[in-house]
Image 1 (cartoon, helix red, strand yellow):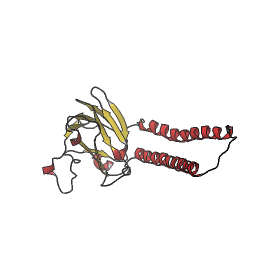
Image 2 (image 1 turned 90 degrees about the vertical axis):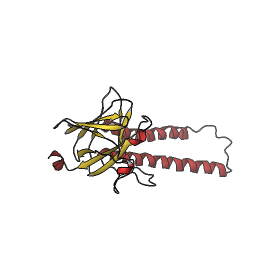
Image 3 (image 1 turned 60 degrees about the vertical axis):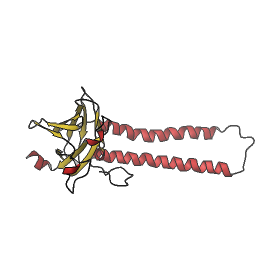
Image 4 (image 1 turned 45 degrees about the vertical axis):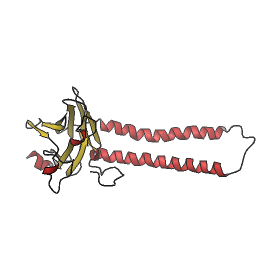
Amino acid sequence: MATWKTILLQDSASPLMEQLTFFHDHTLMILIIITIFVTQMLTSMLFNKFIHRYLLEGQLIEMIWTILPAIILIMIALPSLHLLYIMDEINNPTISVKAIGHQWYWSYEYSDYKNLEFDSYMTPSNELKPYNFRLLDVDNRMVIPFMTQIRLIVTSADVIHSWTIPSLGVKIDGTPGRLNQAGISINRTGLLYGQCSEICGSNHSFMPIVIESISPNYFFK
């Protein structure tokens, strides 16, 4: 989860988020190189006093500044397209979990092994334990096994919501009358925190999401 004064991405808890972090760093490095190069060129143009009266055209440099940006865009586009593909890919999910957004809480349904349904409300401030997080903890967590392919189905019962866990790199809109799905695979145990990321009313900021990732052996018992 995000901590005080954090300016970077959260620690990844899934292979997808690791790839998104690598892509972020890859793109950021390209932008830094471009910024340094442009700044250096502008500075040299401002402070040098050399002129060339007879320079009317430069086909070589025009070819370079046309081809080079195209190569840079390809270097950004190829990993981006790869990420878009794997984000939509769901390979033989072991478990399917349905998340339903309400004003202002979440409902979860497990239908593969037992018909289990429960609501997840934010824990009120007067009921928080010393180890709980204000505005982030819930009374009933979504429990799933780690190192397991999971299909998450998201919808809404009233207005548009958005089920989001930043450390998983997952953000799925919950739209009334529509089912959206995504594949989730968590690579470590622990608690993962998120919130609704679509303005859905006056209590939009009070419908957190908590995933408890546990051992598959313990889960399937």
